[in-house]
Image 1 (cartoon, one colour):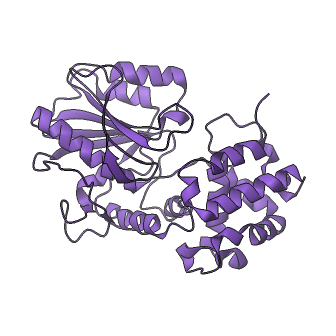
Image 2 (cartoon, rainbow, N blue to C red):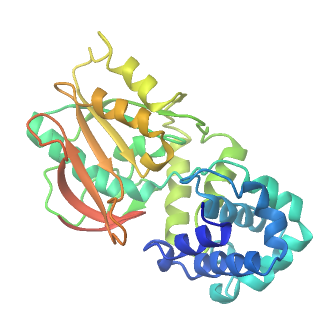
Image 3 (spheres, helix red, strand yellow):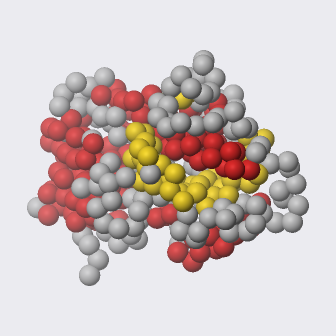
Length: 337
């Protein structure tokens, strides 16, 4: 028997990342209790009760509420959202959130139907570690190709500033340094491209709103990073092709597609759960070709895993990949493998 909406929300609230956010805990657990009590949450979410596993329903619901906050349509809830200057306790957000649901039931239901689109730029911190390692082993330069690229922000990794160790000092997107010893001199990206089934244009106001709404409303640093990355994308946008991962990679890795003088590096971060298993097998087969490297930042499959490994796949590496570092669902902080 498939899990109920309440069970899905409680399971998500128990994930390590969500446990760092009192606001997410309050919203997800409050909605779960309200569902079980037959409250307004059922009217909002019942249409999505049969969504497939991995559709990120709790994150979509939270993004719908954050969007109303960002657009000034939920002022009583905004008081609990530090991203808009709210100072009331995030832990107490469920009561005003429930009143928003009662008043805007149809609107929240509609917004929750949008696909999950979290372009988490914090994941460029482990990406930088991986790029440095591929450059060290191959001599570079690199072609960076991202599947599940959303708005393509992470493809701009070399336009961001990482602590005081790498990147343009005047970049508006500032991230912590990886915290591990790296030789970054060889990280030169000569080509970058991405694909996504539903890409977003970072220059479009609606897309920018969807992306910012997907950040959790009490995680201000993540919010600032995203806004900084969107500013970078205003002058350094990377087109993201509307395509599935296997189809797109098959084209990129086809005859003559790697003619540029660069090492192909395929990158993906917390995207595997959204891809059909048969298609994912094709992705693994395609990236197992000679001369292709893959950086996978995906959660370990075993229950209760507390960190996310960055695995390097490539020539001479065993099928399971080589773990370089471990981080959080949002990237930093990193720890040694």
